[in-house]
Image 1 (cartoon, rainbow, N blue to C red):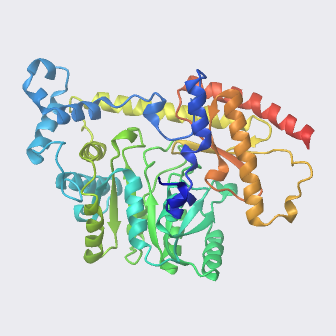
Image 2: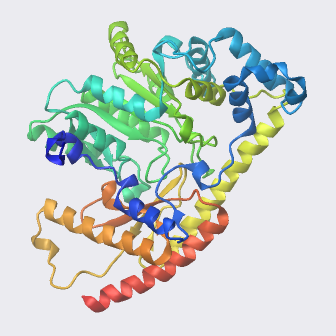
Length: 477
């Protein structure tokens, strides 16, 4: 019988805190009848966000096109929606049950290119678009392709979405962490980037790429145009490819902030030497269709023979799932003004985004009123990275700890905090150590996806818990 010692060591070493021990414990408590407020993962529809009518109705007809022959049922569908399905079936008569081209259905890739052209006012080509099983598969494909040698590494933000650290561990790549500037609204800092890459090279690591998440996960920050321009210039000087994880581009709530795509900024700079891989997904935004696993990967400044290798890599998995491809099509090609389904679509979209904005403000303002806690009110995305202050442990001198010892110590502290928070309040969040954090600081990541009433309950319970927890810790120290 196989034992754990027989498994790939890279798998054993990979960590993914978003679904780690605290979440497992939350599920156990829920099975025992406890109410759990799940704030651990960006899974909107699991947290009561309703799917958009337009998308689900199109998919229902695509999955069972025989309904198109039943006029009594079609009265429940908008006329433009039914016509849209007929047009899709004309261009893709195989429906949802057959494999597609490895790179995805051609007219959907064309729709993605047109979406980018409209969004940014720049050229885009379907021949530089691959449809993927969510943005995650696109990101992992880039990592696989670019990690040529054992010492190759990617710069990843700290804190970061653990997809990147876990995937680098699985594929044998090196992690080059760069700290986001918490004192400057979590923007990227050129000095920190430079220090990080110099340190990595001194250890024999060969940096080949940089990952940037905008809007940020777990920070909720939106990068400025100038900050993105600085990153592109940094990538050029250091011969780095850029992975731009832009899956939250529709999730911007602060009127002072604006989403700028890396593609647009690079076009404005007339940048032709930096390779760009851009990611988008149906899982986030206002769709929240995580379960359909749809997304795309767009290439810029990539020669044809390299694109061919990415096509080969995609073909090894045959193709992205067809329902996800269709969901991606509907994301980039929504109803147009004047069509029957347009008003419902816009109303449902605006309701989702306005509610997310309200919840972000409730969470941010509530947390900042708790002594010993602070957070930047999220400008975008679906998360907040909350900083917590705890009394020092008795007889623990952190000044004599190595960086590795300090990191492990902080990981124990924030993990213990989050587990106790779960046990005592039913609130499920993720320790900051699961995303990375500046040594000597403690955080946790939370979503603000639960309904408004639960976010309000979250803030009240968090305040009561933190005040009691800090008091007990102070007495023990």
